[in-house]
Image (cartoon, rainbow, N blue to C red; front, side, top):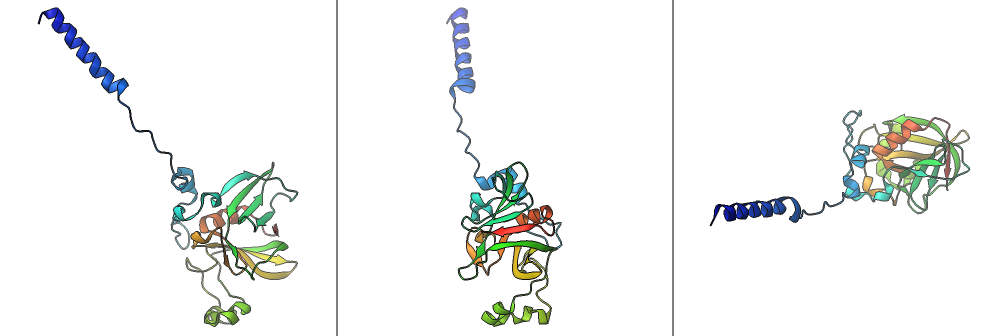
Length: 220
């Protein structure tokens, strides 16, 4: 092989190698992230060790994406700051300015325990005690140990009211219904509770920070 031929052969080989490395080899396309893998969603539903009772992160694979907290367009005649519970779709809306609302997925009352109407948030509590109503104790006598006579159930991660509670009154009368947190995040989007509106603990903490005492609530 002459020097010229040899140089041409080597140059051609190098070119082919370069093509193989840079142009002709394909890489597998990146798979899109599942909704529960989205970094912004993971940040919303992070573990909260700084709370009085540390809250673990929920397994978001068990919560349909449509129930993740989200700011949405929302046209309504209700004034800013009003809470609207859409029982047909398992959503709670906090009405915001400029035709927006913060939307949360909720769990609602089982058949026979639903409540609807217009009322107000009379007070809020972080890590509340839980006192089952007398009607509930009559149905479930084992709950007597948590009755008002016995001081109620202390706050904690196992408490049915979760990390926060908003107390619903009509006039000066306690309806005994609450908006509250739950560790049973897999129940969001279903009818499970005894008439209350439950949110993932991370969501009820967010809602609690946005809602003032005396805010109006409409349960449709």
